[in-house]
Structure formats: C-alpha cells, structure tokens
Image (tube, rainbow, N blue to C red; front, side, top):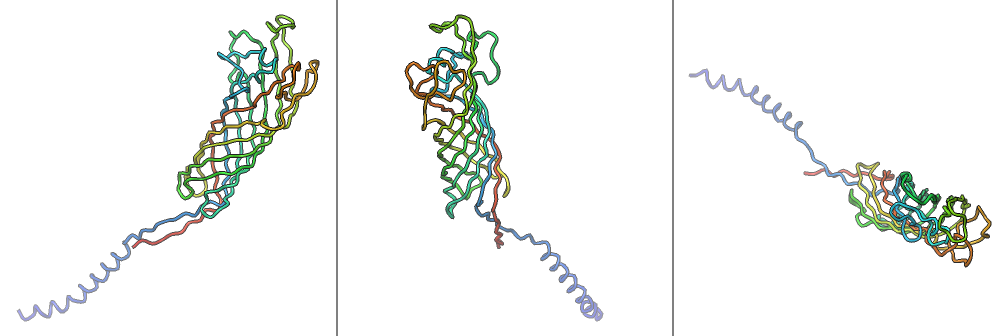
Length: 275
C-alpha cells in the first residue's frame, strides 16, 4: 500500500504529455469557416446566338407561303424568320453596378424560308436580307450584387442592310403570267432602336450564361425609296413613293431570342473569417 502514491506520482508526467498531445491534435483539426464576398464585375463581355421572328411589315409569309404580289407592291418585305449572332460589351457606370453602358455589334439574316421551302407551295418567290448592326445603349441591372442578374435595356442602332428577292409574276396585274425575276437590294444605311429584357447567371467569378429577348426596329430613321421601275438593283425601298415598285412605308422589325456566354472581368474576392 505504501508503493501506490509513488506509482501515481511517476505516472503523472506521462498523463500530462498525453493531455498535451491531445490538445494539440484537437486544435489542429478545428475547421475555420469563411464568408466569401465577391465584388461587382467592372466589365462584361457577352457572345450570343439568336433566333429571329419577323413582325410588322418585315413579315410577309402566310401559311408558310410568301406572297410575291405584296413584296412587289411595297406592302411587306416578305420574310418570316431568321438567325444571327452578336457580341455585347457592358461597362459599369456606377458603384452599385445598376447602370451599364452597352456596345453591341450584330449580324442578322432574315429569310422567307429559314428551314427550306416546301415543295407544295404555290408562290415561287422569296426574300432574304442581311443586317450588319452596331448599337450604343444603357442598361438597368435590378440585382447587380447577386449571381442571378435581371436587367432591362435600350439602345440606338445603325445598320447596313442588303439582300435579294425573287418575284413570281403569276396574278400580278400587267405582268407576264407564270414567270419570275430576281432583284438585288444594295447596301443601305438605316438607323433605329432596340429594347431588351434578359438575365445572367454567374457560374463562377469568370464566366456565366445569358438569355434575353430583344425587339429591334432597324429603319426608324432615314427611310427612303429611290430609283425607277426598270432597276433590277436598288437600295432598300422603305418609304412611300407612288408608282415605284417595292416602295412603301415599312418597318424592318423583328424579335430575337438570345442565348450565350458571359465573361466577367474585374471581380475581386474578400474573405471574412467566421467565429
């Protein structure tokens, strides 16, 4: 019995060493939590593809069939749908990131028969147009500090429009019966506007995805109809000119459904340690 206190005293250093190592091991396995706060992007670049739907006088097919007489008489441009692409640059104008200055370059092709003409259609005519567009605008971002951003925007655009059309003369008064003729639309400068509503979703600090719907009218300003009825090549005729074929007051307007990728620049990260 007398040896027991001595035995306990001899064991104390070993117990203290075990407790010390246990404390060190525990302190090393504690997980520290952090809150990461991302700053707003200073600059955004978007690359998109789009699907177009003609509206107003740009539309000119009914039951999937173009009507040459309406193109010839200047009532419509005679198209239906199309496709295109655009690149959009966005620069923040305020600290909160709600106002962005946008610059856009775009190409759109609008056609009578986007996916090919049906063999059963009666009218042998068609109309196809190309539009090369540049635009400057402003955008309001409703949720600039969120990963999911919703915005609305508007811009003023300038375009070079060209194309070609084939007219089927069957049933056109004063023309040959079952025959066709081709006409070329030369490069024509017009100005208009666009309005859009869209959203962005950040996948990480560098890249995201983007979807939007946009309405464009490319010839609000500078409409004109020039030339004579003998011309097989002429500029876009989109203003009233009595007696001039293809001439009529017409809007070159369409909707675009847009989707693509967003690339973000200038996003910083700040880490805050949570207790």
